[in-house]
Every structure is written in C-alpha cells, then in structure tokens.
Amino acid sequence: MSITPTIYKTPSERYLLVLVVVIPGAALYNWSDEEGNNHWFFSVQRMKIAIAGTGYVGLSNAVLLAQHNTVVALDIMPDKVAMINQRQSPIADDTIEEYLATKKLDLIATTNADVAYQDVDFVIVATPTNYDPETQHFDTSTVQAVIADVRAQNPRATIIIKSTVPVGFTEEMRKTFKTRKIIFSPEFLREGKALHDNLYPSRIIVGSDSKPAHRFAELLQQAAIKRDIDVLFVDSTEAEAIKLFANTYLAMRVAYFNELDTYAEIHGLSTKQIVHGVSLDPRIGDYYNNPSFGYGGYCLPKDTKQLQANFHDIPHNVISAIVEANTTRMKHIADMIQMLKPKVVGIYRLTMKMDSDNFRQSSIQGVISFLREYGVKVVIYEPALTVANFEGMAVYKSLDEFKEQADVVVANRITEEITDITHKIYSRDLFSRD
Image (cartoon, rainbow, N blue to C red; front, side, top):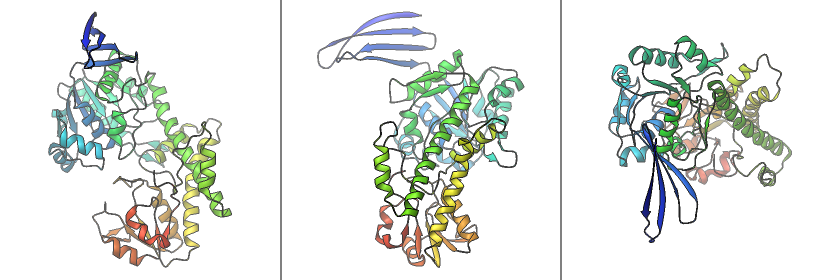
C-alpha cells in the first residue's frame, strides 16, 4: 500500500490536499472540500462480472456495474436478451431506460451460460425465488442451479446471491459446494425505481468480511452517485435475516395504515386527517403511509410468508398478524365494493405501483378473487396485458370503452386519466403516491 499527497487547484482558485491511498486493485481518495467537509471515494480496478437473471434486480445491477466494468447479463428468454443488446429495457424503469439509451455501458446479454461465466471475477445471482405455500419455503432451485453451473465452469469466480433466500441458505450452499466463495448481499430496491435505488442506496450490506466481499462493496460504491454510503459487512445468515425483517417491517407499516383506514372508513371518519396527525410524530414520519388495497408485488408477500415460516417453532404474534392483515384488508375492500351493488366492476390497472408494468402478487388480484366469489362481474383495463381475456375476465384496450362499461371503477392508485369519472371511482388513495 502507498499513500501519495497531491495538491489540486479548484475553479475558485483554492487548493485542496488530496490523499491518494493505493492498494492492490483499487485507489482510495480522501479530500476536504472548501467548506471543510471530509470525503472519500474509490477508484476500483475493472472487473468482469456475469449476472444471472434480468428482472428488476439483475438488470439494474447490470446497468449499474457496466458503467465501470465488463458485464455479461444472462437470461433464458431470447426476447429480453435481444432488447438489452439493442439498448432497450424489457422492464418499466425510467432510469434503466435512460442509462441504456444514453450511457456508455460495457454490457452485453446472452442466453449462453458458458459465454456468461467464462473468466469472470463475480457472478451475481438474481433469479426468481417464488414462495411455495405447500412447502412453506422459497423455491431456490434456480439459485442452486446457477451456483452448480458456476462452480463447474469457473470455480475461481465469487458468487454473489442477490435473490431473496431463506435464512441459513447461503451457509448451506457453502457446505454443499465446499467453498466460502458464495456470499449473500441483499437488495433493497423498489419496482420501477430499481436503478435509481442502486445509484442512491440507503445502505450496502454484504454477508461476508472477506476480501472479495470488500471488493464487491467497492464496486457498488464506485458505481453509485450517492457518496458516504453506509456499508455493513455481516455474517451471511444475518444478512439474509436483515432482508426478510426489513421487508416484513415495510409490510407491517403498509398493513398498519391500511387498518387505520379500514377503521376510519367504517366509522365515517377522515382517514387523511388521522394519518396526517399521526405522521407528524417524527418517530413515525410522514411517508409510506398512503392507504392501499394491501401490500403486494414480488417481494413483500413472499418475504413475509417466508419469515412467518422461519418462526414456526419460535414464540411470535406480530409476524403472523402482518401476513393475515393483508388478506383481511383485501376482503374488506371487496366487501365495501359489493355494498355499492355494482353490475359491472371495472379494475383500473392490475399493477401494484405507479410507473410499473409488474402485477405479480398485486393486492388488487386478491380483491378480484373475493369479488368473483361474491358473483360480481369484473372487467379489466391493463395496458401491460396483450390478451383479450385474463383468467376469464374481459380486458379492454380502450380506456373510454372501459369507463362506459363499468358501474364502479376500482383503482388502487388514481391517475389523471381517470379523474373525469370520479363519481364512479372506488379507491383508498389519499396522496396520489405509492
């Protein structure tokens, strides 16, 4: 290691003392700005990185890291691979679309695992791990398959698991494959804002304190726009627990404000006034408090259920209540809609969030299930669907025709294009935000 003091002249004719700390594979810079604030940043040696899976997690990490490294994205779907190679995003994410179109990225995509894993330093696993209610466990088969392939083809590579896995999974894989070069590093991304959240991360957590773990954290820091990022190096099992407990806390907050709204709706009170008064307490905060039809999306429903399963032999009340509260909320919403006695209920968007094209596990689908049990006719407006029929329900391409057909339009989030039919809308959206 070497330390070199260097003087730089600023545009305002001031001089800064910059300490350049050079270590193998990286340079660490420290300087004080004109206001006396101390700063650090890394300049890290280029790495070759493979990423298995190009959903929100995989593609956002691929674009992020391709700014300063050679990245190969692997996916089993040729259409997605072709879009990425044409610098088009296969998912709805404004920042990913912008970076693919305008940034110089060392990024290619392929369906060939042999090509992807050859000579890489890191393999990031971002394949889906759906929750199986029968086994009460994440289906980790795709993650295990990637690990097996990488260990067979390139045992030198360090494997970074970004897929959400059960607590204890990484340690089990280390024992199974007889290596410590498998690391879990949780992601904390929002659908539709995945690259933004990687550029401005709330924290970076890596489930190892090894040299490759530190190098990987440096790569994430180097690619981010935000500086002074909190970085935690913890054990792998603790990192897995952090992910599940963090998402379950977010689900709890959604469930809490939804239950507050249920109380206010039944008693004819102003939810908005109550939420505002409650949220002014700085310990609670005026954010993440907009009532909805329930928490949904790819992460929260499955992560809460997995954590509940992990508690099967541990005394608990809160974790199970969070899971059950979501079903209770969706049934309440369906009950309130049924009380309006509609002939046709129109579902405005299946997606969970604004600016998203993903409706996996969206709460509105739970509401639909209850409505159909009650015998209510349901039609759908969802631009992300290319079919004319979705699970036995008519899908309208024309928004105007959809508005005419529905007696009640159910909207988890209200947008400007339906404000002309406010007299038909049933929604619990108070703040026009997610």
